Length: 312
Image 1 (cartoon, one colour):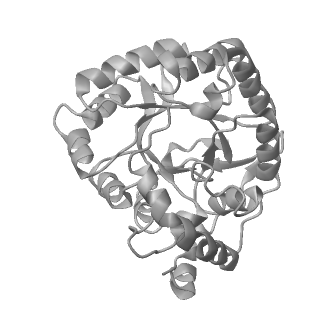
Image 2 (cartoon, helix red, strand yellow):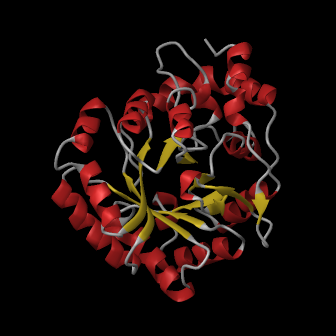
């Protein structure tokens, strides 16, 4: 069954967001937690949707998004064949510089040496000496957290990368397993985190775990982490079930700094930027209604899918 209206509204304070600053382009900007940096409310997802453009159209699409006001670029070592996402983003950064931009990347390996080796390759692809944010990529469950946390594991490597100024800040991402992410955030000193946050996943549904919104998000906020939302459309499962602007505004109405969206067509970039620029916080009652409508029909299938899914 869905979460009660009282319980939803009782936690609605989590969704109370301050009026954002607005850039010269009209893009709302928010502070990314204790990093203190202002980033665009809409972030450019550099995963499979980006690499589907092909190199020249992809580079043009990213430049267009940045020209229209996006400042947050999200990528990973595993996006595209042979690091295409990072390579193309590197060419854009080389051409236009990094001033005013926030570069976040993710590293997949769980062993220290492998993590550091892949980080070195990533920095070369991106043509930078340092990223702004380095995430441990895609926490997948209790055994995976044990590997991340182990001596000689990915967390130790991420901390070392920060000490060596290969990254300014560190974080961790998670598509499923809200309880495991909660433990990871409590256990370690991450600066940021990225999690799946959308209206369907918020609902409490039989045979499905609690949501990131109710379990992991409060921990991140208590520790003043910078939070970014992903999987706004749940790999397009929710497309057609609610207007795209409502799905986007739901996630933007949460206390997140940015919503990361993969946009495989230029018209998607333009439409989503217009939605971000027109953003007004969604009333808690409307958020509750959306969750109640979308959750029972979708949450179990979405949770199951994300337990094995990693965007590439």
